[in-house]
Length: 291
Ligand code: NAP
Image (cartoon, rainbow, N blue to C red; front, side, top):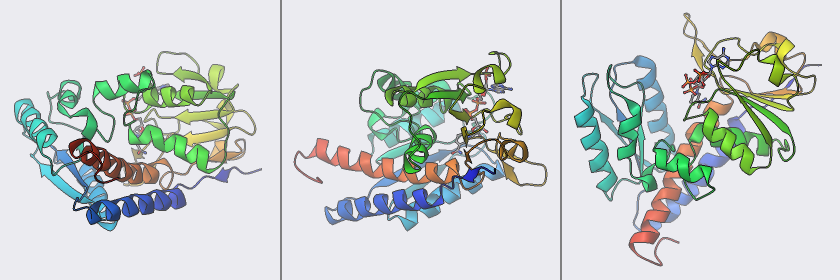
């Protein structure tokens, strides 16, 4: 048996087309949905990623404003830029791209992103609202995992799901989204002990640790579904996930590839969140307009 590959490409395309359609409708009402991406690094792979968001936005009729503050930007400058963008009516979504300059912390800064423009669910208010089931944007990567599972008709209610990783951007929000879908959720991390103690009973394993080859075939049940969120750049420049594909492929029933899995869906969801944010902001400003 060899695991079926759960490619995210078709789903990513469908979501991007939906965002494009939304953008056309908003444009007909005189509003161009616009995403601002704040960058403060000279890291090449980050700039490559930001350009890929810009290209995807362009092809979906969404404006993309890259605010590049350079690798020496101070926390004060970043905070002030995020506040300005939050108050700018021509911007509907804001992302603060990591990594940030040394010594600049993400935690305080993301609090300056207005919750209604927080299309990547970075502000702690968004996570709090998610925790109590109030409307908010979930981090796009966490939502991408759910969208992939839904797209391939993988049931979640009453299923045993193990999430490896407990970060505020992936593991925690994903565990909340899974709970909302009535899964029985276990979250593992670097201090939770041997992974197989948890993963060997899981119907679905989601790994988001950023550790090449962390999840091996011996960790998973025969027939399990494995979602690989990890993105690790090898010395030769190639991109791999957290799953040891060679050993997992023969055991799992299905596996997302890296690249071409969760990551491709994530970018499309950022665009869709931006059109959703623009529509909601237009509705709030002028009751009855833009849908
Ligand atoms: P992070 O903040 O570094 O968190 C990693 C998590 O994994 C932590 O909770 C850590 O545990 C846990 N962990 C690390 N080593 C482990 C081990 N040996 N066993 C069990 N748990 C372990 O990373 P992140 O921002 O959540 O991102 C995780 C991965 O997803 C990275 O590869 C990142 O590049 C990727 N990512 C992909 C996308 C996408 O769109 N595809 C988007 C975002 C992130 P502790 O809490 O105990 O330290």
